[in-house]
Length: 287
Image (tube, rainbow, N blue to C red; front, side):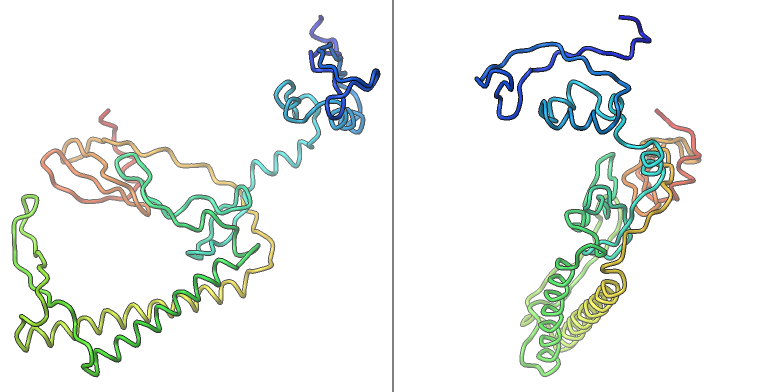
């Protein structure tokens, strides 16, 4: 067949709805060549696809958008260049919304592997739904109320801490570090018990305050953006991947993990530190 010929042949099962041959009425599964003209009108092509064979098989045998050209090139180009973004129901951050749900976020790359992820990637953005956010805020508010009750009981002396914090310096991984050892509260002297109580009260009060602040932030965010359309922004080109090993002033440096624009590394002598991801990309690769 000449290349310029607009008519193409495809061997497709000649069956109608529910596997019944339209001509004879009896069930019959045969294969016969069907000739599809590439310059048919869009409505005729769509009618042909919807009535003569299943869409899944049609996707497999024909390249749907290339042969039938059902989507306009302008819309397709706009979708490729732009990105829909919304707010996560769990953390409140603005992230991409590729398929109705939030994209994966909140992770870090450690030794070439993804580690950790925000649970909000499983849910729709706040602009579309806020049920998960409201349930989360209710749970946090209950936990905050429990913490505040424990703070009041500790201040009144009706309950005591379980442990007092005792520490000593030890060599851990070739370095001197302060190592904490839990000691039962009853074994501490008056000063140690007083310090342990004050530390526990401060810790629980801080957690309760942070929880209340987070709930207020999420509720205000939901009130502001829920029901509004998703934001459409221009898609940015992804940065080059980070090299696992680079050559720097301290010799070969190995990336331990990357998080929030920082690369945490370790050199050949065991010294560890961090640097910005942009600075890491500018260094020559060791591999």
